[in-house]
Image (cartoon, rainbow, N blue to C red; front, top):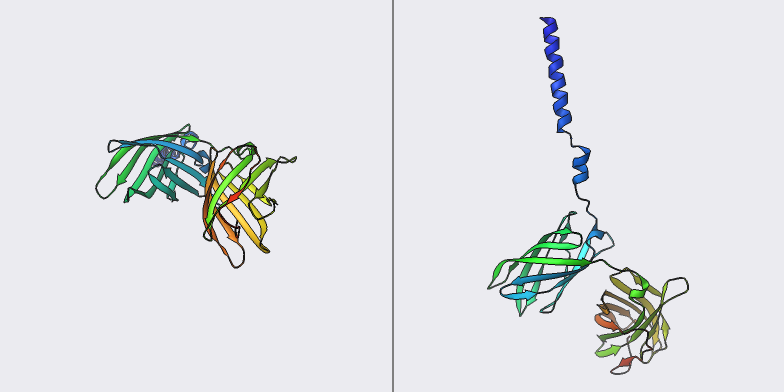
Length: 268
């Protein structure tokens, strides 16, 4: 009887061990989980949506902030440019939500879809005061191109500050060390070398200092580039005058430019 009991105990232990091993995830199971890197979705997204008898073709520019979190800017011909940071990416599914203003009405949008090989297939839930529903969405991604050639050339910029409209130009070249260099031109100031040019394939940042009417003015331009267009913000600090305003611009190639302004230059 004692030997039989020992045999039963051994059999139970073997069965328990086998069950424990079977319950452990296999290497194949762990490998099947998608990896989630923000770089898999960073770039320019173009979408096509059909809802309420209309077709919309918005875009979404995705990038990461200093902490590696995804943030985006949503654009559509019928709505104002809208930022969003409610973005989630798990390696296969991309979701983001935002509120836009369409013809004076607030519209809540919630996108979700599967991403495979830079292609988005999913839907958007929309909710407005007089309409709500779900529409199918398809989209494609264009990965960011951080090559210097993407921003080389002459950029015509336009901004309003201190009650004036300014149209400076920026000429960007590639130096012998393959780093970007630039010259800033605006009426009323000398041609000014740009101290720092940063380009990550999405955002172009220009840092410089100019002298205007004996005032030292620090200027920082930062904007997102789409094709040959740029939109963003410029910070200026001239001591008694400082602030942040929006700017826009376009690139027209390696042609020398003449800056313009509607009145005397007091800020860039």
